[in-house]
Every structure is written in structure tokens, then in C-alpha cells.
Length: 462
Image 1 (cartoon, rainbow, N blue to C red):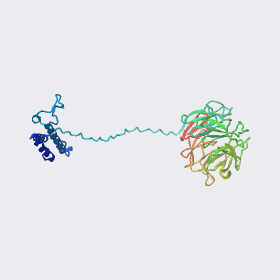
Image 2: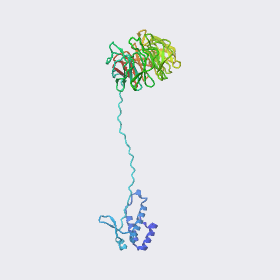
Image 3: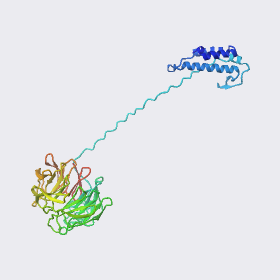
Image 4: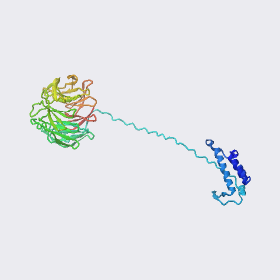
């Protein structure tokens, strides 16, 4: 663009013509021709090209004028092509006339390029193949000491404590020789490794005792028979601490007993009921153990003496006592009053049976003996009505073990047979066989059931 229309340029031209003749005019004409012949800038900069051209021309005029006045030395090209300052020419006018036409260089700024956002496409992850659910029995570890008529107690950390019982000594045979003796031995089963390891021993040897996990994680071991003939029964009790792996004595019962029941109440105390005392006579008395004091205190007595009965904690905090000594009548213990009261009777007499609390609050009573004969029948107790009603029967009669499964069904173990009770259908369905006659059945935290037969042990997956 020719700067003739610029007022500021017009004044400068007039001024420098007055002091230097027509040299500025000639320079301006050359600049104008250079501008007109220069290539156009890219369209994106068209809005500022005129202003840049005016500024460049104005600056060129000022520089040429200053050179002509001798205030700034004329630039000369060095041999390498670099421009350097030299001394002023003695004839500014001649210098300007001989100087080549100035070259205007357009400097186009590099446009700023906004980077495109990087979009990462995640690689598809391989789909994990789910482990197939295989129901039934599988082998696991063996006890370090073969024990029968022992107790199995699930600990807070998921392991299982086995304490006391009868044993012929070390070994892994599931059918111990006839010469059995009571033991104080205890061991721990770890489901994560499938192994049994020895832990501290009890202060006294015992069998036909009870073991109850307290709210603080310790295990209360109470009573038991101290001789095979059951004449001298124990009144002592011990506490097992899973942290230290040791047993320590605690308060003693007012009456030694074995084949009794122990029930953890909602308030953390433990109800000890019935059993047989110093001899073979059943007991009607009951005692309460308080972990806060470590002492046993007497509570109300049952309406009848019982041994080989069951005690089940109901959702309302009461305890259902059923059977024992081939009895049909049942009773309820109320911790609020400390008294036992009669409730409905079973259809038939039974003892050495099992009981399991159902998800709806009713209680399943199954198997056992009646007047010395094995029975396979089962009944349901409803706390709302206080009555028992018949349900399906087990295929095999006898003294059973039971474990409530996480899905609301009940696993029943009779001798070596496994059966699952479905409350919806009211039927027992065969579900396999153990290697030997089962001795304990313990529901683990992962839903499996640990079954021991003295040794080795097996796991049942529902």
C-alpha cells in the first residue's frame, strides 16, 4: 500500500524535502514500488497488513532521513553478508543515490496450532472366566491328633477351634482303637490353608462339654465328663483367647455337668442348662455365666430334668428347650425374668436330636432317638403359635448333626449321609456321603461346611 494517504507520512515528507531536497521523495517512490510488488500476506492476516505496511514505511522514511542527516551511520554489507555499522559517508546525498533499492521483508507470525485432544481408546480387557460352582464334598487337611466327641467352634477370624474329646493318641485314622481316653488337646483349622495346627491345651481334659464363642471373640469351655464312665463330671470352665492361643481357668459351675447345653444370649451372657451331674441322673437346674465378672450364678430351673436336649435362641431373645431323655414337652427360657415356662409338645419323644433356626424364626427339630430307637422324623416349632407341626422325614434315622446354610436351607448329617432340608418344599434331599461317620459340622464364613470324622476332614460346598 502506498503511504501517500497517510497524514503523518505527508508531513514527514514535506519536512524532509525542505531540509534534504527530493531525496526523501525518491526513497518514498522506491518504497511504494516495493510495496506494490510484494506478495500479499495470507488472508488470515489481511486485517493488520495495511497497518504493518504503514508502520514499516514510516520507519523506513525516518531511518533514511536520519542517515541523510548523518546522525546514523549507513549500514554496509560484510563479506559474509552480515550487516554492520560503519563510519558516516562524507556525502549523504551521494550515498543515498548509490544505495540499492531497500528490500521489505514481510514477517508472517507462525499461526498458533491448537493441539487436537488425545483420545485414548482403552484396550479391551480379557473377560475373566468365572470359577465353576461345584457342589458336594472335597478333601481338606487332617487333624494332628485324632479326636472324637470334640467341640468345633467358629472363631471371629474364620478359623475353627477344636477342643477336647476322646482320642487314642496321635494318628490320622478316622476309626480310633477301642482304648480311648479324654484329652485336653486343642487345635485350629484354617480354611485359607486347609491345615490343622496345634494350639494351647486346656487346663483339664474333658469330653461331652460345651464351647461357646463370646462377644469379645474368646471361647467359653464349660463342664464335661472327666472319666469315661461319666460318674465324676466337671464343674470347671475355661476361656480360650485366639490372640494368645491359650486357655485360662475362669469361674466354676455350682454343679458339675456334661451333655448340657450352652446358649449365648442377646446380652452377651451364656445360659447353661440341664445335662447330667455327679452320676447319670439328668439335671433340671440352669446357670448363667457373665463374662464381665467371670462367674456363674443360678437362674430358674427347667420344668423337667433333661440331658441330650437342644437349646435354640429365638429372634425375640427367648430360648427354646426341646426334647432330652425321650421327652416330648418343650419349654421357653426368658432372660428378662430368668424363668422357664412350658410351651407346645412335639409329636413324639426324642433325644440326641438336632435343631436349626430357620430364616423365618421357626425352629426345625430333626432325627434323634425315641426310647432308644433311632428316628428319622422332623418337626417345625412356630414361636408365634407355640406349636410343633410335622414336616418331611430324613431317609436315614439316627443321631444327626445340623448346620444352617447361608441360603436358608439346612444341611443334615446322619452317620455318613448328607441331606439338605428345603423349607419351601418341606423335604430332605440326599446330597452325598462322607468317608466315615461324621462327628462335627461347622458352617464357615465362606458358606462351606467343615465336616470332621475324627480325621481326615472334608468340606461341603452347597
